[in-house]
Structures are given as structure tokens and as C-alpha cells.
Image (cartoon, rainbow, N blue to C red; front, side, top):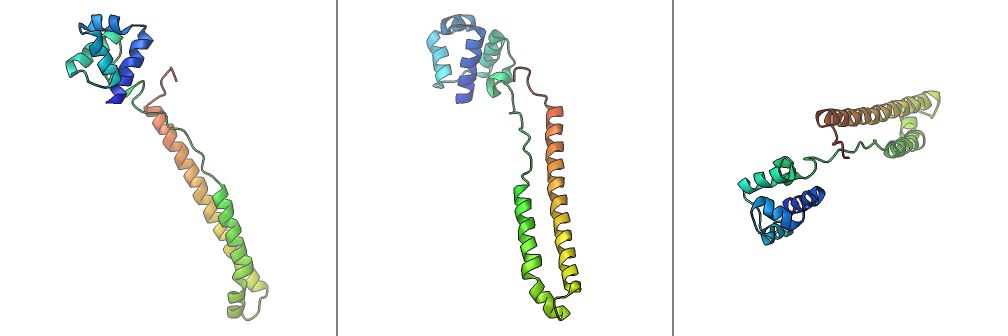
Length: 155
């Protein structure tokens, strides 16, 4: 309700009308306009249509403001968690896992080191792929939203 009150007040001021002038154009009292703008009462549907006509805006703008949706802000995917996970896996793969692998292989030799290296590289590839996929999906989503609902010219 307060959003409608704020929208009426903002649009009336943008139009350069005083409460008295606005009330005269709508054939109501100034006190009625004041009550609408303070959110103490609300205009009926017919009156909303009349308000929109006087203010020369669409009725939806009275209800929802300058735009029905806020422009989505494209937020990049943070790569710091990915870097942290890669470092964590590096420590796990090259400092913690060699002990159990050396028990399986016998001693920590080149084969165990090669297995650890392959494990580390596969983990890095998976995390890089997932983070890039999220970045592309995020970008595509916001491009689609902006194509469906272009930003208002006033913004």
C-alpha cells in the first residue's frame, strides 16, 4: 500500500502539480490526496484510472512504480572459492594421499606420484569447468532477461 502512496506522490511532483491542483483535476479534496499520499487511505480502481489519466501514466506505473521489475545486475561468479578448493585438493593429493597410496603401491615411487598428479589435474579440470559453466549460465540468463525486458530509458 505504501508503494502506491509513494508512487502517487512522486508522479504528482514529477508532473509539477500541487496537491490542490491535483485534487481539483480529480474532483476530490486536497485532504483526500494527502491521505492517499500518506497511505492512510487508498483510491478505488476507478479513481486509480482517473489518477493515471491526470498524471498521463499507465495505471500499472501507479501500482508498481517506474518499472515493474528492477534491472537484474549481472554478477560475476567468484573464482576465489575455486582457487581455495584447488589449493585444498593440492594439499590433499600431494601431501595427504601419498601415504595411503604408498601403502597400496608398496612404496612411494613414480607410479604413486603419477596417480596423485592425474587425480589433481582431473579435480582442477572439473572445478574450472563447473565455474566457467556457472559464469556462462549467469551471463546468458541476464542477457535473456534484458532482451525480454529492456531497461527503462530514464535509468
